[in-house]
Amino acid sequence: MKKCILLIASWLPLSLFAQAPAESEDVMLQGFYWNSQKQTGWTQLTQRVDEISQNFNLVWLPPSASAEGGDAVGGSNVGYHPRQWNNQNSCWGTASDLRTLISAMHAKGVKVIADIVINHRAGDTGWGNFTKDDFGTYGTYQLTTDHICANDEINTDKSAGAWYGKAKGANDTGENWNGARDLDHTSPYVQQDVEAYLNWLHGEFGYDGWRYDYCKGYDGKYVGIYNAATQPYLSVGEYWDGGYDPVAAWIEATGRQSMAFDFPSKYAALNNGLAKNNYANMSWIENKTTWRPAGMIHHHNYNRYAITFVDNHDTYRDGNKYTGNIQAAYAFLLSSPGIPCVFWPHWVGADHDAINRMIAVRRAVGLHSESDVTVTQRGTYYESHAIGHNGQLITRIGTAAPTTAPDGYQLVASGTTWQMFADDAVAASIVPVQQSSLKVWAENGKLCVQSPQPQLVSVFTTDGRIVYNNQVTTLSLMLPAHCYVVQAGGKSMKVVVK
Image (cartoon, one colour):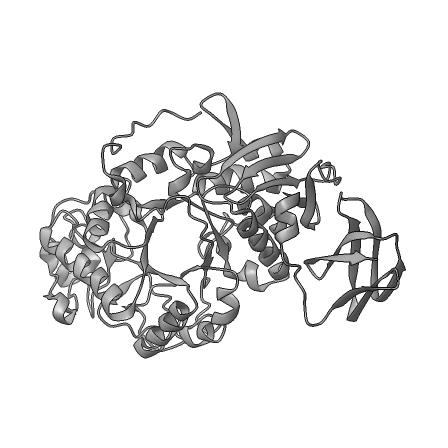
């Protein structure tokens, strides 16, 4: 099923691999979706920095350069056909608003990842008249038709008019993008322009890392060149391919100086696995010996370089959308290796509290991008055993999965068809999640609940046995003296009845 990829960059010093942080406990938020300019613009995100920082330490922002369609705040251009790299007024907000947002994120310990669109570029008023890039002390550059790939549409499509046949660059080193002019990354001048652009984004705005858009469009070695010149905290490429071998080959082509989104995991484990109740699809075997969560994350050579996700702005609006249980999908992500990336609509929707709870559990256990995760059940349900910096976590997904806690473990998060069990030492350290609209307490041998509206309240013993499950606004339940887990509103709380 998967070929052996030669580790052609294994001789490089590990100091060069900072763009894929080792044993990273980071959790990323994709802070936008397609046409969310009025919901996730710079000012709107700034208002939510406190809440974001409580759950995430990386936020991926949309393209911030002025793009085709204009730079009116709230406009509809989204930003994936940039026109002027040094103009950071966009549909998402003004340059000043962007600086304010990034500063607010940094003040709360959150790193910000820029969406870098350098495969292609839109002309100002025609096919090939590019706007000058003025990056101040970082340099000034003027791209021309000399820097457009020779096999771009400008040389093959006569609707280019006066621009027809003008491109003089080398042939494209990757796949063609016919929506704008493909840049010739073999050109030293183009490389210098890109490097100045990225260094300027870091120096002037404070961006911490790069998400490379459509990196199938040019050879991966250029991402390695750009990262070596700019030294981001983290780099990730959108190499959209469901195959393990192509994504691994792209990571190697960068000199292992970039991570990649784990499309193989999305398709195998989620779209074609969990969404279809095909639990066997959720794991791949590593080196013919050990079953691991499916995708790039299944192999110790590449889990450090994988960013896992359920959906993104593109897959969410086309036939690649995940159609299964959202919470169960995040139970898979947040108990697996790699750096998990949570999608904005999932986080702000009905699954908000459950996702936050799973993130809290992941952090308490100390799961990281290179965690040893073994899949122990892959037939009628999915079960994994993960080892983190601080402890261990067992995750079960599926209607047939047993709900009783394994010996030495306690239930720490659960929902429909999924449960997470942390080892006793870690479970005791997890701070119960409270919510202002719900009150849970114990008094006189009773477990008490008050809610302003009816909601499902479930009460478990710490070994996973259900002792109460009903929709209520108030509850006064006489129970034997014991520690219980109360779940309501997507949150989980430990309460001791005396």
